[in-house]
Amino acid sequence: DPNACALRVVGDSMHPAIRHGWYVVIEPSIDPRHGLYVAVETNSGKRMVKELLSMDSDVVRLESVNPKHGRTTLDAKEVKTVQAVTILNELSALVRSLGYYEGRCYAHHAGVVAAREELRRRARRSPTCR
Image 1 (cartoon, rainbow, N blue to C red):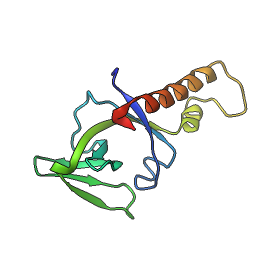
Image 2 (image 1 turned 90 degrees about the vertical axis):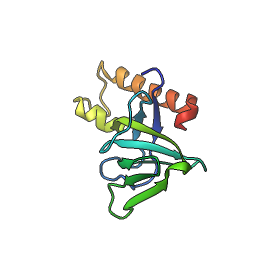
Image 3 (image 1 turned 180 degrees about the vertical axis):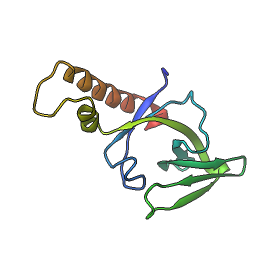
Image 4 (image 1 turned 60 degrees about the horizontal axis):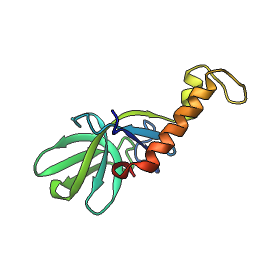
């Protein structure tokens, strides 16, 4: 998706599924639906990543994974955007999952570094994902 962008997550409302400091990739071309993680922006500028429980013309219902934060119900008129989250990962976890370890130099490390830089570049340039 050429309009995809990355966001760095701040906070623990989605812990342990999405952790503080991790990046999520937002793809505006995918329709948000029940059960997906979504990035939501309100008209007042508040941004959050949550699980979408339901969305209709009246309300948007969201759930935090962390039980300390619970459910959020927003008036649909107050919601600016709801966009699907398609990829989430902390980059060092991605490196470990691929079998590459920090402190050692592997040929594919350059690819991981390039991916990190691309995520940062998209996060900086996208007005819909800041």
